[in-house]
Image 1 (cartoon, rainbow, N blue to C red):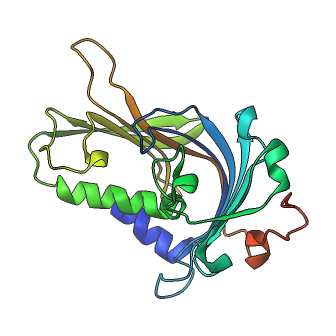
Image 2 (image 1 turned 180 degrees about the vertical axis):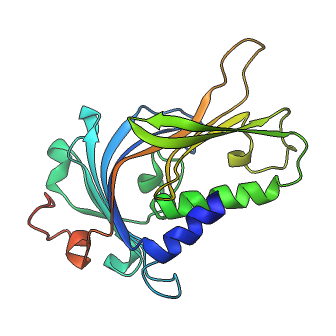
Length: 235
């Protein structure tokens, strides 16, 4: 399913907007609160070679502590740096940050260029290939699932025992849940859970990403990734 979704994106997905809701354990091992973001993305897939420069705009809408934060990153603009202004009084300054630097990664699990539908489905393909013949993996598919009234399919991947100790962190889950829109071949949601602390306790959340109100091929341009855009609040 993930392979079919990736092929469909390659043929059909130039750009999109969405309401993006995430919650994740950051690089320090701390589970952050839920964050809601208005998202714009121009994908790498908008040329025949699937190698166009990716571009991202984020407008944070919740929680209140970050409401008003705006972030722009483009592989071919702004020298590859994050262009950021914070919420509140800190928003009086525009900062340019290394996307993998300490400030940019504070409270984050992945750098900004890992965000989005394309990279998510590519990661799912990579993980699926690793576990293709793994006897410790169980997969369940629910074909009549609804995500906020959107008909979808729920794929649940369970590990019956932890992977080898040398596995990367994102492969070390007890349960992963993937929600796919089969009509549009888009991943709507991904959640993964770690291992319960003891028998009978719920598994801890590791990461949760959900894309609501996805609008595809809306005609985004360089203006959407320019801090001088009059619709934005960059000082």
